[in-house]
Image 1 (tube, helix red, strand yellow):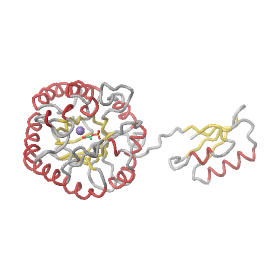
Image 2 (image 1 turned 30 degrees about the vertical axis):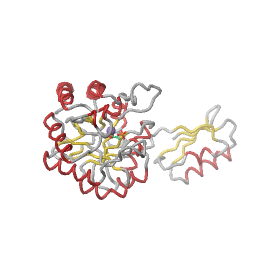
Image 3 (image 1 turned 90 degrees about the vertical axis):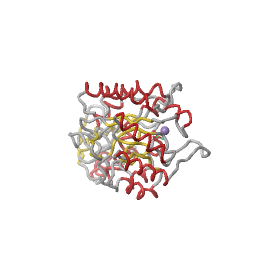
Image 4 (image 1 turned 135 degrees about the vertical axis):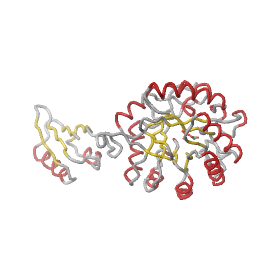
Length: 337
Ligand code: PEP
Ligand code: MN
């Protein structure tokens, strides 16, 4: 951290500020220029509250050199994080495909779709049992029963389960029954939930909030990791922009940016990004080429009658076709799929 002081700051005020900062546990190096005096802070500045320093009248400007996240930062762990779930890995040279309906709608439906996506090459099954809907009058999910149906689908196919958690009172249910716990875009900054999930021994699929910067997203990962859970998978699912033709705007550059800043795996959800079934394949292909570690795709046997997100769900045949293209691209990128 670098602190630039106002011109003509008196020596006794500079000494006083330096002492205040030293008492925060970092080393302060002073350099006097022709216009400004600058204080360089050396050590762990992550816990320093910038606003306390800003409150001092002699402070002109504070520049953070270090990112505010540590455990998620590639500077502190150079090698990629690789997470093993079931027979597959996420974050290494394997390309992960999570597929399934937006919502779990019944036992037979989820078992049938699980068999289908597995046959087409998916390695994880998704399906929402607890649904964060914009309207309280929309279908809210089958809840605990939905988790039971996902379990049946897992027993029938062997596919590990990925499903979204909405509140911390369900953590034990998820720990007992779910393989990857999803935190949705709307809960990306539910810090209490993130802290609780930091205490569990399950990978967390952390979706990017719809108005979150990459740094805020990584800070949310940091919340989970700082409580002891290192297994976070980041998921870019589109952000809100002025463009309203698509449901969101897929921030494709977030993939190489996150891979540069962090060692955590990063995957793409082209379904919630585009919001239209015919955009899913091209966006998924972009994700592979941009270097994503996988994709999360909504697939439904009958999108016209889906209980949620039918318009962005692929029919089985379309999913199969997309998988063929994805496999070619993933192999070209040196991935196993
Ligand atoms: C979902 O995956 O069904 C979902 C609600 O996604 P998001 O949190 O990205 O909107
Ligand atoms: Mn959905």
